[in-house]
Length: 187
Image (cartoon, rainbow, N blue to C red; front, side, top):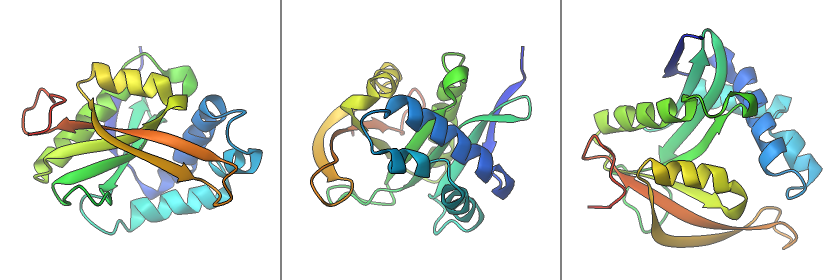
């Protein structure tokens, strides 16, 4: 059995984070997103973006954590203050990405990432975590709902290329951090 843990990401993790994201996107969004968008998730540009996010975060709430099996990066979570107009940063933080390598799911890495995220953000006096999910992300939504996250009623439609051809409808899930048991209700 592998030694498992979660730690803050380091700049040299960027290629591994991009590879995990590319593998997850290829599985979840295959046939739904254009091939160039899918290829971009694991590209050299993605590696540079992840390295910048890790090396020079713009605030304390901009964080990237990685899940490890032994010394191998098998998942990650990235968060930042919410930019939604109905939420009040710094109390509200958005999870922008939560990915576990497809061959490494269902062994606790996602739960460890979610719990570590809650612990880190609770330490920064963040009151609520939010995440946007689409119908394509049924597995992620079910996982988060089982972990205490709940639909907070917010909806949005993203036009990924600005031409109306690739449109994604999303639902926002939220969880309160005041209680370490991570209830889904917003206080």
